[in-house]
Image (cartoon, rainbow, N blue to C red; front, side):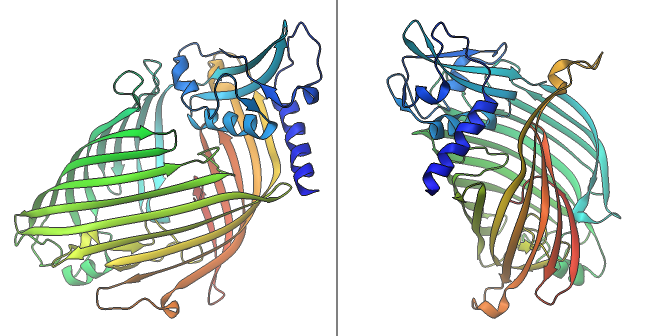
Length: 444
């Protein structure tokens, strides 16, 4: 019964998502399944090379498709972030089964002024210019440049190429970041005696290989520079007020999510291990990261997702700027703006979400002057229930359930793809204290 209901919902979705089939044989779409692919036709990719699209597909010529497979692959094409609209049409033309993928490309150059509320604190405003150039050779390459002033002034430049050598699935990321960053560690501030800043400079190079569609292996090298006005042991660990040291990292990623920007099905796993310093300038410590996320359909249009992540440091001297902190990148809703730190952290989250508006394609082509690629959007509205929990530990502390802080609540997520999404949530901590959360991007 449940499977039939899910299939019916997918039929309705596909009927609304595909464009009318221009076929010489008039066949009802419901009667096309199971659909054996004789040919794949891609239209609308005026700038994007065809292999960028086909390399995301989980099927090939001769395979048999169901509505579920078509929906999943449509979302994977959306995940590229290159298209405002994606339509997938199973067609029959002159007794040939053609799967038509119809695309509408988005705008690829964004010089955007921004104002950012750092650490979710209105007293910590950062502002500047963000420049993003995507897909400039039709191969899904990205160039990002950020100039920021105010709180944590910085400059960063990044280049990413997902297909460095032909179609061999080697990828490259290279860039650097410079920042006069405010200290994030509560313990370091106590030791220093007042809030302070550190100059931070980090050039990096990452090279990797994608295997079997979902797997990525990579190695990265970086150089780290941390400068503090005054030396305190622990704030810097080289014995001087400036730490200079190399870094090597090995990593693995598995990603079978349907829509990366807002997943509903699939698994994401990432693990990395970094060697920092390697006894250069008396610096030698390691950082390990692990992240596992699962997304699945429960029944009808009700979905769930859960996550477990952890970060571990090891070595004789760990600098405060590399401590594991909850309340920065990882946040417990209910303790959203409160920071705790240690050598390690553990974090977990569970969420149930349901669409109020599952998908609405908007075209505002009638507006003059503005390029039409900037006037196409995929909108959706979801409501969610969530629970988060996490803890930080120092080396001499043991893991215990009593150490975990937890929060729970409900909220709304508004998607405007391919650009961004907004979350509005009302959260409780485990003592009943409440807070509002206004945030960009998906929780996980």
